[in-house]
Image 1 (cartoon, one colour):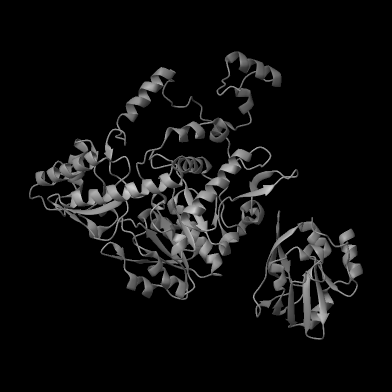
Image 2 (image 1 turned 30 degrees about the vertical axis):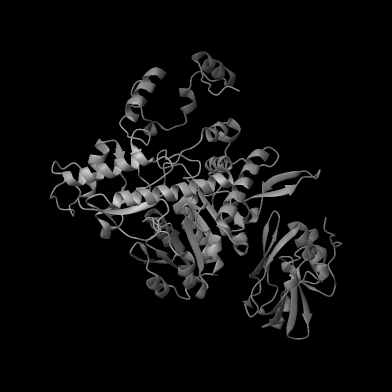
Amino acid sequence: MSRYTSATPADREQMLAAIGVDSVEELFEQVPEPLRLGRELALPAGMSEAEVYERLAELAARNADAEEQVCFLGAGMYDHYVPAIVDAITQRSEFLTPYTPYQPEISQGGLQAMFEFQTAMSELTALPVSNAGLYEGPSSVASAAYLAIAASKGRRRFVVSRGVHPHSRETLATYSVGYGAEVEEVGLEDGLTDAAALAAAVDGETAAVFLQSPNFLGAVEDVEALGAAAKEHGALLVVAVDPMTLGVLKPPGEQGADIALGEGQPLGNRLDFGGPSFGFFCGTEELMRKMPGRIAGETDDADGRRGFVLALQTREQHIRREKATHNICTAQALNALAATIHLAWLGREGFRELGELLLRRTAYARERLAATPGVELLHEAPVAREIALRLEAPVDRVLERCAERGIAAGYPLGREYPEHEDGLLVAITERRTRTQIDDLAEALGAAIAACGDLPVHTTGKSPQGVH
Amino acid sequence: MTKLAEASYPDDLLYHDQHDWARLEGDEHAVFGITWYAQDSLGEVVFYDPPEPGATIDKDSSYAEVESVKAVSDVIAPMSGEIVEVNEALADAPEKINEDPYGEGWLVKVKLSAPKETDALLGADEYRKLLDA
């Protein structure tokens, strides 16, 4: 089947003749004169394919990317190596082109892939039920909130740590307006969720407590201990996790989480433009019928052969309508497939080894960076793959200078955490070599020294006013 | 394949036009469930979400949900009252609603708050007429 078709003037003549009409204009005769534009659309002249290519290449060249700059940017999405086998499978048109391919008669491959994805996430989080994916991390958090309202039979209060990703907290706040729910934030102390404040904030009206580990500042939280407050008041414990750390950190399901979810991008998906990616969502058996999203199930066909279908569809909008657990119709199935291939390629051993590599490299980076003049650790809590630093120079100026040297040094914490205006979040992946880390340390040191006596607490504008 | 009940509408029950039945027990209590027609329309029942004992239910309002593979149905209360007992056996064997809708597939036992509400209910013949219409 041709991938691209167009109509020639001769084709148009033929079509017009077939329907007995003299011109295309005749088809619009019913549109009243005052509503017509009366002129051609103000579009630039068409370009040839080669000209379009040149134009797009020119626009694209204005962006720096992770191939061009050494990327220490993290803050929720990470520059991991995506093996070629991922594209080799996801670019197959059977996977790439269909929209909502859920009919078991013709989508066994896709449904099987979803089932395997669910199995993998379930094993990694140590929670028995997983859906086939949601849109991304932050909206998955908001979906968990909706589930918590139903599961608690109407409680409408959420308690969320400031360690949870700012985008997730913002999304939760946005959705909570629609839910008629109240959100209370609990602050961080030395990089970790303030346990006493959390315990004080949770009460009998709380539907769910939201934590993230590692949190936004890179610190690994004691989820089990913090979660006790939720258990005490019958609130759900929802934990957002970085899936790449699940090979080495204790899974949320073993720490008392009722729901484990998060941003799936680190598995099998490149940074791209900050998406598309997928969210994963796993829960306990008790919550199974309240789960959002598509769920693939395993069954036998009429001849007794193993097959896959969508399961528990009575949760979904095409059956339960306004009482559905979610309105998602598509899933980010292609991105979830990429994750599944990546995990299969790594294997259990490989996944754990990769996690250990991240721990070792991060430990090295932490030591190296903390030893750099003008750089201090923002907190001493244990980390897995991301380090929060404090710089003795304006962060944005330092970032500019590092960018000139071809290094995207990290994420400026001051953007989301005003109390850490001097903060920089540095992410480590297996692509960040020892040499690159040494270069980063050197670049940071040089940049900070070059800023001289500039006060740290500026608006981030350089003297030329360039931000 | 679950053994389905024969199409039947016992004469000793009272019926609501939303396909629910009531069996009076004494002056103040009744047992409710869904009729043969309702379970047949739903198909194989896979889940019953019961109300809590002690909950108040109102005539003509939904008090529970019955879920089959392809549909979810509100269960309508034929009469008003307070739930005194819920059929726990359905948690593990929801298919009893298909197999024995008037016996082992009973849904709730209720202490009636307005026993006169029976005046608004249908007898077996009237209910059968409604189905044939």
